[in-house]
Every structure is written in C-alpha cells, then in structure tokens.
Length: 394
Image: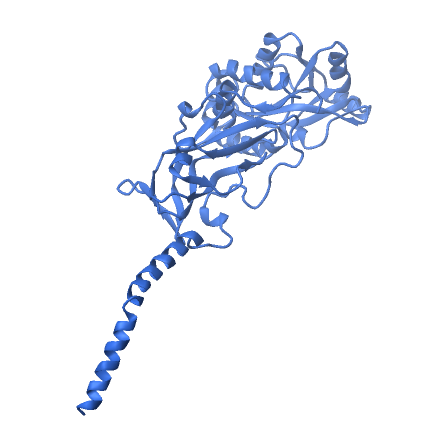
C-alpha cells in the first residue's frame, strides 16, 4: 500500500499540532498542510488561512475542499491545492483533521488516496489541563468529556491509536510515527524498541500491572492468569491456592493475565516456553493472533508426561511475537471472540475429561479387576464345594 501522507486526528488538546511540528523538525521531508478556518485567530494558532464564512461557502461550491468540518459553529477545511503543492515539492503532507473527516474515503481528482492515520488521545483530566494551559477556559469538564467521547466513537477509522499521558511523551510518539512511516511497505517481527513504544502508547499489550521487563529482544512474555477450565469446571486461582495441578494425560484451558489490542497492521504468534515444553506440556490450539483481535489469550495445555505438572499464577508460560504486515489487513478480525474475556465463551462444547486421562483410569480399573480374576476359579470351586456339602447334610 502506498500512502501519500500522514493524518493526525483525535480529541482536542491531544497533541496533534505539537506532534506534527515535531515530525517536521525530525525530518524536513514532512510538511504540515495549511488548513482553512472561519474562526478568529488564537494565540497558539499556526499554519491556518483565515477566511470569512461567505468565502468558505464560495470555495466549497467550487469543490476546492478534500476535507471539511464544522465545530462550535465555525468551519474548517483542507483544500486539494494545498496538499498537491506539498506532494509536487517532493514532501510528505501531514493533515490535522477531525475524526469525523475520516468516515469517507479521501480523494484527489476523483481517485481514492491512502494516508497513514493516527488517532491521538489522552486521559480527560490531562486534556482539560492542556486546554486551560493554552488559554481555553470557555469549556467545562462535562462538555469536554461528551465531545471527546463523541470523537472516540470514530477512532476505528484510524490505523493506530496513540494515548499520551504527559508532555514529554511527544518525542517518543514522534519517533514511533516516523518509524511506522519509514517502514510502511515492509514487514517482519517487531524488535524490542518498537514493542516498548507500541505497548506504552498503543496498548498493544495491557494488563492491570503491565511489566515492561517482560519485553525480550523481539517478543513479550505472557503470564498465567487466575481463571482456567479443568474437569468440566471453571476455576479461579487464589492467594492461598495459587497453583494449577495438571495430572498426567490431562488438559486445562488457561488464560493469560495480559490482553492484546492488535491493530490491522500487526499479527501475533504465541507458543509455550521451552521450560514448559521440557516438562511435557504441549500447546494444543492454533497460535495465530489475527490483526484486529482484542482480548485475552486462551490456550489448551496438555500434559504428555507421566508426572503431574504444577503451574503457579503469574508464571511465564508462553511467549508472543508480533509481526508487522507488509500492508494492513483490509478485513481485520471482528469475529465472535472479539473482546471476550471469559473461558466459557471460548468453549461451545465442553469436553469434561481428557480421553487419554479417561483411558488411563479405565486401564487402572481393569488392572484392579484382573487381580480378582486370578482367584475366580478357586472362588467358583469353593462355592461348588460349599453347595455340595450343604446338600449332603440337608
């Protein structure tokens, strides 16, 4: 896929303009597309063309705008000519637009064009502080939250979602966006330095207490969650009972403590650690994690050894690696397991016991029965003798 530029969209005060300026400072090949607006100039404004509402309407009637929107009774737009001039100069246009503007395909001269798009966001408390810091004291917290939640409904139209927490996040976010632009048409396993950024800002992996030390050279260590399925029952590990016991020939369905949020451009593959394999455990389900999937990872673990295996909650039991696709999937995962976080939702038909485990139990029972079979002739003889004696003396 060939992108002609970058789109930065998101909530108000999420850092779109700051990141755009940092990208331009990072590399002169980037250039922000001048926007058109009818609102009055603000102290922190840059790169706007200010026109009247009458002129805005006249240009709109001449079909000059690729993107247009309305906010607080003022109009905003980006014209074809401004984008084309940057492209003709051999540079990469950066568009700063509203989330709603991404709902429809973008076109130049009637032809659909693709942009590498990012939705930027931050916690509402931080967004409000940023608004106050730049002198916008006209909005209250409730109005801002309502507006931001409205914007967040349209974040699925962007390829990547980036959440910042503090202002010094800007450099790392700039580095991440620049890297994704430079590798837009290449794929492969993601290295640790990119994994860290995608986990930190895009929630590629998250949990109640995410541990960045779980990031290896090109993978992430998954840890055992508290919920698991065994012998037809859903069970939970507790502080006083932190271990799962898997008997020889038996299986469990286990969950990870972490959940993943796969963008359409990234797929994953996970498998058991070497130490688990050496104990005799095998993973009995497909390891593929599709682009677009969001949720906890579940796996069927089968004990092939002759000894019971104990697994403790929080144990590093599997490792996942992430693969950047050559181009994003046009049909990312939206199946029945999306956002599912309960084991029962992954078990349409419950197999209560392992066939091999049941077979071992049956063989054990047969062995006990065969012990008595050795004495069956003697028992029959004694019974016959007793019957004959009883008849003789009756």
